[in-house]
Image (cartoon, rainbow, N blue to C red; front, top):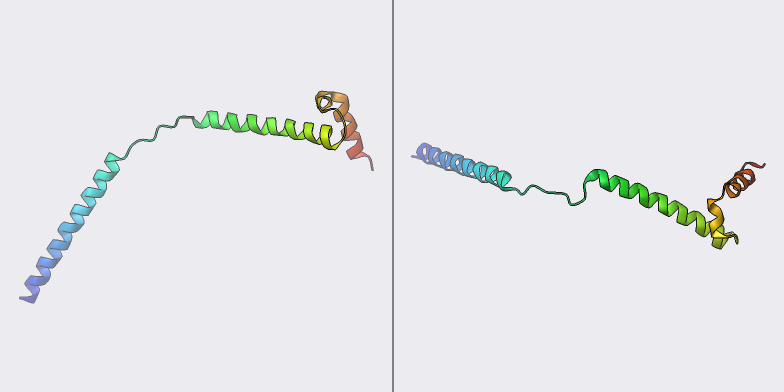
Length: 90
């Protein structure tokens, strides 16, 4: 009798496992496909542009406010050659 009981329990557990597997498979099939509003290539471009803008803003702030110069001067080549000369001078 106990062997028969064990077989019945094993059969039930097998059936439960099959049901769980089918429900998991259904969940996988029913998953929504995620559509990105902003494509990855556009995100990369946006990040690169933001980094460029922040570098320009940081240079303008550093040269104009902290350095006491004119912030528009960061766009001139002579300013950068002067800064490079100051850094390379030993």
